[in-house]
Image (cartoon, rainbow, N blue to C red; front, side, top):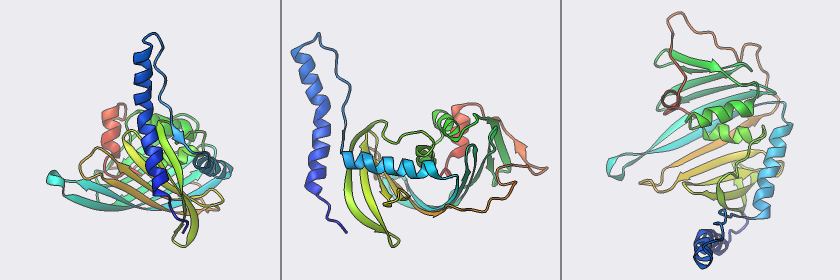
Length: 267
């Protein structure tokens, strides 16, 4: 493994932390000067790694990702529990996906057929649906805007015209690191509320994601190890949802409902 320069990381984070302070000092010197927008300290090789991933995802016509996920839950008095889940994501361009989540906390199904997004909670025997935009990036953006927390799908959006660098203050390459025997490049980023890392192969395939939520007791983490099939066999009914006769449809039209429908089992 390539050695990681911890001094470089500390210096980069410190420099980024001082940026807004410098802006305040400049404003005090000249009150008439508009405050400068916050700047970031993203190294060129870190930005290039994400661009490589975006280019790779953008070339895939269809793919299946199986993710082994763990997420921390912090209980009162700082007790920390780790919950495990398995997520399968099947995507077909330009406007189809299905996500199955099975874990310790809950089970979820997401169907998007190019016109409708349906969320299914099998344990509660309910489902919710709404008319969706006609492309994956717009659907994911709408979900996130409505309050859904879907870290793995955020990576999916990178291949459909989105970006993971919004709000990033620090980004740098840590070095080479094997993930389940596959050589990857480990890249670390910092945003205001979270630190996140991603491991990307030389071809651009993301193989691992770790997100650490800062400023919360216990610094809870989300981790996903990804297994890829870029030539999946996809059945014709994969993206269509047909409810059982005893299933109940519930409204899906505001942020509270989206958050409740995706809580505990989001990818």
